[in-house]
Figure (cartoon, rainbow, N blue to C red):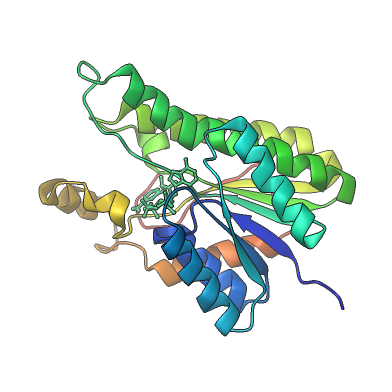
Length: 243
Ligand code: NAP
């Protein structure tokens, strides 16, 4: 039996990661569903994938912990014998003004949104280098380009993730590994639920089309990107806000 391409998606128990997992599964990918705390939600994503005929399993791990991140990637390779793609999607927010931000809030967001992707990328690229192929997609944010008030930790982490994307693309290109960043647009998830309604309205007003990205558009974009073998080191904004 020829195994389909294997992709690991971090933070795939809900929100954007869940949507990507389901669509990549439907497209024939074998999907590793990572989560940190909500096992039941991750199990339901896996069940939905399997019901649709996809190969899938869930992998608990806190990506901000270097050992857990390595075990996560190694676990996927142990289960399916390879890893073709990594989507670094797991993320958190701990919004606070700079003056009031605690060190714990700073570190939590940097550890999860920047160090976590580095740990996963480091381990995944180790396997991909041997395979001489692979793709890594980092889910960043337009805030990492534009900046924003009240979330310096998140902005710095996402800006760092864009830098990591470019550095890794340069370094891993000779092993035929594509590394790109996607700025996914604004989606109604638990993360964005925390944003006050007046700020939501301001964000919406920045879209030149007057509407935010459909999650299906994002999924289609990511799916196409997984298939492009000559594109690396790029930052793609998937909405109508102008960079
Ligand atoms: P979400 O609904 O809050 O989901 C976050 C996911 O990340 C969950 O599956 C959660 O798993 C997982 N997670 C959090 N910390 C983790 C850790 N340390 N280790 C492993 N998994 C962890 O978020 P979302 O809105 O879908 O966002 C997904 C990504 O898109 C994030 O990187 C975010 O920054 C980015 N983004 C989102 C928006 C938006 O509008 N929503 C806009 C721009 C960028 P558990 O629940 O099991 O802990």
